Image (tube, rainbow, N blue to C red; front, side, top):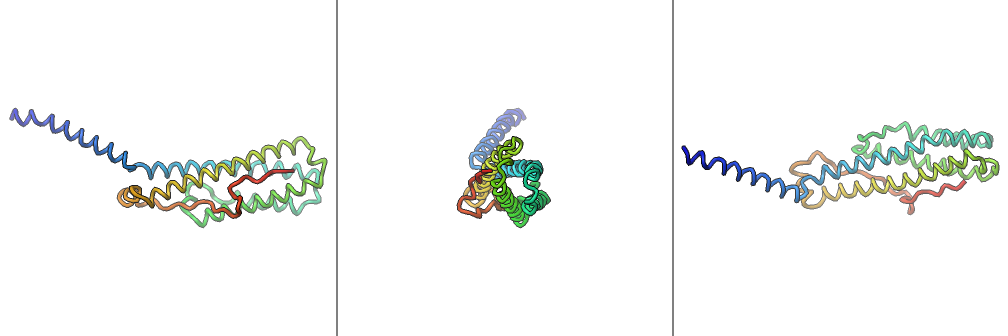
Length: 205
């Protein structure tokens, strides 16, 4: 009885040490990498959302300012308003990351809005009074900063998705994916539509 009681604490200590060693080995083997990288993808996507929303919020004031000096450019102004409406109508919460078709629609809508804004920028060249308007200059600066932030956010998102997808496809991430995280799927990302698609467009009014 005493021998049994004397051994029990040692067994408990040994098992605790063994479990601690296994936990350390597992953490060193990347067992937590997939969920960590998945959270980084979601965080990076939130920044993409934030910056596109920031741009969308600037557009109404920009359109109103341009309208005050260039009412005859109604077609261009309408195109911007409609493109903004289409872009903001797409649900862009976290669930879009698991829906490649929806992500592609979102990307296309944002691309159409960028094109409409480019046409609006070109219009301003014909109106010197508009180009010197203080409110317009302030909006120009904010839009330029936002376009830069969009480019950075997209780049970070693409990098986060690449890291996550690589982990799933390579060892030991592939092993942990099959054993523990089989519900996690390969993520879609933004596709470059031009040779310089990863660079912010120049905002020149």
